[in-house]
Length: 480
Image (cartoon, rainbow, N blue to C red; front, side):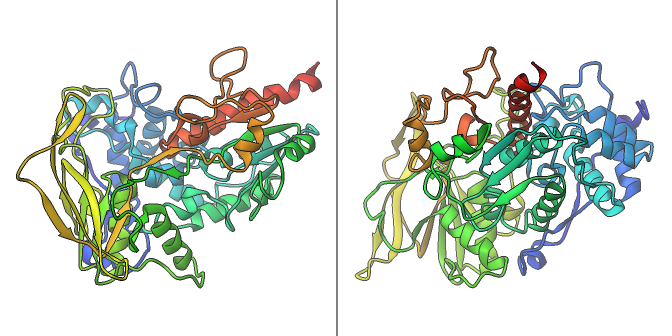
């Protein structure tokens, strides 16, 4: 423990941001890592609790050794901080930018004060590690002769692939899109995470022996049967990509889009592709869904120059402080304001959309609905609160329901693949819980395809743990 009185002496600091009116002029990241002196003071706030709830079941899903790297930062031992962080997290530059930080919600200091700035410290460590040249390839010292196919190049697939390559297996990662990264690449706007972070990890992984194959839709371009014949093990890490729809009157109107159609095309244009985007310039934009994807639509629409942006949510407005239903150290139910919200949006709660109106050309012109009250698990309209709002663009950002069935999963179902009640791949058929094994021999699954829509940090955690199970499976023959 660096400084026993640190949590009494220093207040929580936040990463400095470029002002909203300036940052909306481009798609660059706008937060800066802590200066060294600030990072030291923030590391000193860690109380080195007897039981560090910041990691484990209540905190960090990848089990980062948070008190340890806080202590290293406080002492100025930056390389050791990086080595400590890299033991548990393959991609802290992803989580340091995108994770909602359940570790901070579980921080013991958070009971009486704002918690330790764990996420900001993590980002500062990894950004410095890249600058200092400490992040280098870790190729295996020997090869196992075993081949593994990973289907999907999101954080789960990348983490699983990197772990297995470092263990000596020959890994091929298949991606149906033209670039590696999954929703990290095409679902997360660049102003939250620039794609250079993915690109340099790709170079590191290639140097470690990973082969990337893009524009290959497994289940269409190559059959599951062929994949099973060519590889000693297959990992499904293809995510949960079927968006939740809103099948109401007028849903087919021009201008009503799934959020990912909007975000992915914009990311491709930012990357330099000659592509026609869904442009929100001078439009009245309605975002249906109050989560992170909806927030990303808000930030992107602001950068387009939308005339107005309204984000609506079916559930009532959360409390501004931790709700009693989610006491410490649980992740709290409470109102959250994202950086995109800071840039300009009208947020409305307890709103039910009843339908969409359109003009003679079939273009959406308005949405209509009413306020609702939640009663016994149902949302009942409140008489007299009916509304009709102008809308030139409507983005449906209500989450994802399950993986895409057509293609690979349908192909594997012919081989005996089982799904759970929500339509996710059932993957717990080993001799103990946490095996990640599916009902098809030598096929494993991790990330959103297995657990449903979740966090990037959970995807990395699952990828690592799945890789460990696959490694032990592959080495049975080698070790006898």
